Length: 183
Image (cartoon, rainbow, N blue to C red; front, side, top):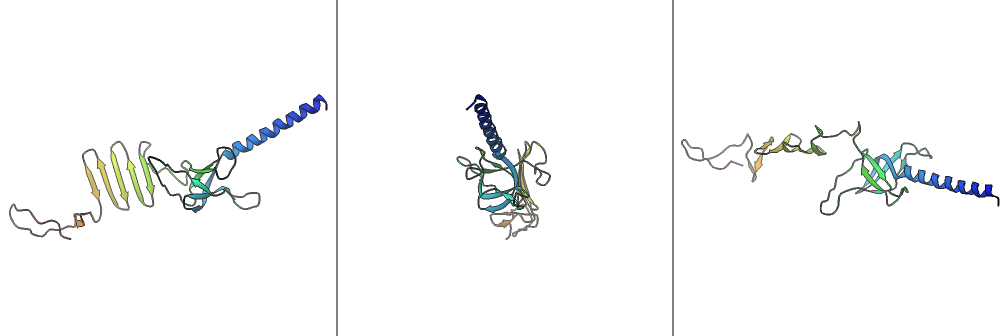
């Protein structure tokens, strides 16, 4: 074998390794959208049309959540933007679906850059330097440094109506107290 043959063989090996590394690098992080959901596992649509003319779907992979001293479960929905993370560049059982950043279709729920906002199915938790607001539909509770403000069509405490439509029994003239709210 001549020196030229040895050099050619070495270059072929180098090119093959570079191709493998490039393929693994491309596969290490791929963006897509949730196509199917099975509990805490999802399949992501990584390309609208694959080589066979059908959508290119990931295998079933776990959705990233926090575990340990703090834990979370944040549901995903069909169409949510996600990223398929495959640390070794091989898409498979070790791959993990992680939430992708905001898009035009999935916009940031925060009103300002300094607001921590979590929204889901008509509910919201919003935290700012001024306070905390919990809301669902038309009802909300806002907590600030010295105030708790509740807004609701029906406000209840200990199964009693204490909202703006509540009424009392035991009303008498003078300085006496009334009975607790009715209902």
